[in-house]
Every structure is written in structure tokens, then in C-alpha cells.
Length: 408
Image (cartoon, rainbow, N blue to C red; front, side):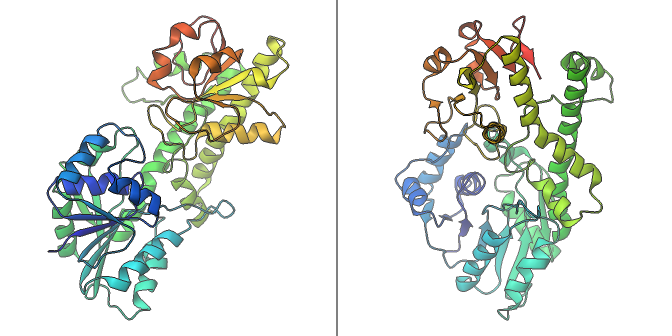
């Protein structure tokens, strides 16, 4: 019996594997991380996500398997990480290349290889096709290559897997339609079949669009701070116009999509990405802006010790445990550059100590600080407003309504 071998069991690959298994298809999930595979085999998830445990249990009931070995079959979905090189801002395709080569070692003739990992435009032409062709394989005959970029966000993954539209990039329209039918087992939204390069570009463009819009809001926050204006009031009024929808400013941009994908375009098209590069610089500057606001508050209240400052939130967004590219980590790096050691940290979603001076108990954390910097708007802190009232609060997420609360 043919089955789907899904390669990479992280934030993207695991929910996708579970969704296919829930729909009744035979699925084997593969990851080189033996600890991760052992955990999944024993029935334990490695990250939290609303609805994920229920989906996991359904997939286990339907016979999903987990392995550190690639399996010989007809259909492969590759969902491995795609980092970027910080120096050149170009995509580092090493994990995708490695996964494709491992598939080629064992796959059936005519196998379908679907890359879900987000890649920069032209990556498959530049890096993946040569890997296949140098083995003597004919693409379209010996193997079929496709790109189906993921389109989900931590915190709402399960819903978005079912309800977000999908793009299938294919060399051959008929093969693309077959893969469309495969994803239709769980995806209830529109699935568009196009060419591979358009699929690559569309995913990067989506995240770049959001990055630029966030940068506009963040630049407004800086302008308003300079002249003592309320950026939130101004945005609220401006958004009453039917064709205006300004986003909310924040302490920076995190996650593995919006904060990373625009760099792919900057790295590949350095002479053409003026707006995109400026947006990236604005958003990357926000942790330094937060640091300046902390300094202002300390000076105003004659607080000399940085150890009296507490950062609430280590994740990159609310109500998830995903810390990738988190603005809080970016802020801690800026503090380190200025020899500002000892700032306290707390996040209810991060269960292990991963930074210095991290507290695991919220009240203990509050007892040690005078200035509370809200970096993430978890529901946890929204339900604990009564116990933070006595602190000096720098609210970077605009969730506190207390008089005297400091804003961006």
C-alpha cells in the first residue's frame, strides 16, 4: 500500500502529517531528531497548539507512524527548516537539499516530491533540479517535483490548515491537479495550481506585504513618540476610513515567516528592494526603541538597576510557545551590547529555563521588579491585570488601560 512520507516534524510538518492521517490516508512522519521521534512514538507532543492534541490522538488512532528513516513510497512532503544566512540575507537551502537527496536514495520511479518549506524565488531551479538531474533522473518521468508552500500561523494552525487557501506549484498541470486532490482530503478552501516559481514567489510576497505594513505602524509609533502624540488613538481614527487598515505597532517582528522571508528578496535582489529593506530595518530597530523607552522610564523614576526591569513574554506572539526570532530575544541582545545584565524574564508558555534570570512563577517574578515591560499579549497577563497595577508598566502591545501606563 502506498503512503505519504512527510519529512520534518516541526511546527509545519507535524500538523500537516496529522491532518493527512486524520483524513484516513496512510502517513509516516520522518525526522532525523531521534528524541523528537521517540517522544511522538510514546504519544507525547513536543509543542503546544490549540487543537493539536485532539488531532494527534485521531492520527494515532488512524495508524500514523513515526521514524528516523526515510521510507520507500510514491509521495513525499518535505517540510524542513529554511534559515537564511545573516551575512548575505540569502536562503540557506542545505536542509531541503539534504532531504531531497535522501528521498532520491530510496523513492519509487515516478515518485512525487512536494516541497512545503518556504524558499526564495528560484530556489528549486537553482538548487533542487540540479541535485535531481546530476543523478541522471529525468524530472517529470523518474520523479515529479512540486512546491506547496505552507500558509499557517502558530496559535491557529489547525483551523488554517483546513480553511486557508493553498497554492500548488507544478511543472505538469495534470500532476498538479493530482496533488491538489491529495490536499483536498483536508483543505476546504480554494487550492490554486500554478507554476513552481510563481508558488515560490507568492509565499514570500505574502509575508513581505505584512512586514511592510507592520513597519508603517512602527514608524508611526516612533514619529508620534517624538512629538508626544498617541499613536493608538491616531490609528484608531485613521482606520475609520473605509479604505484604511493600519496595523498595530509592536516591539519588533518575530517568527519564522514575516521576520525572515523578506530577507530572501533583499538577498536575491539587493538593487531592487529599497522599500522591503527599509521595512526590515524599521522592524528590526524596534527592540532598540523599546530599550530607549525603558531607559526613559528608569531615568524618570530614578531607577538605577536594570535588575529592577522585568520582560513579560519570550515567545514571538501571544498564546503560543514558539520563540523563533522573538523580539524579546532581540531586545536581550541589544541589552547585552550595552552591558545591561540582569533583567528579569517570565513567560507562562515557556516551560524550560532558556535565558538567564528567567522566572517560572509569575508572582515571584513581579516581586523582584519595579518596571514591567509587556512584550507579548498573552491571555495570561490580560487575566492578571489586577496584580500588576502597582508596577510601572511599559505596554508595547497596548493591552493595559491603567492611567499612567507607558506606551511605545
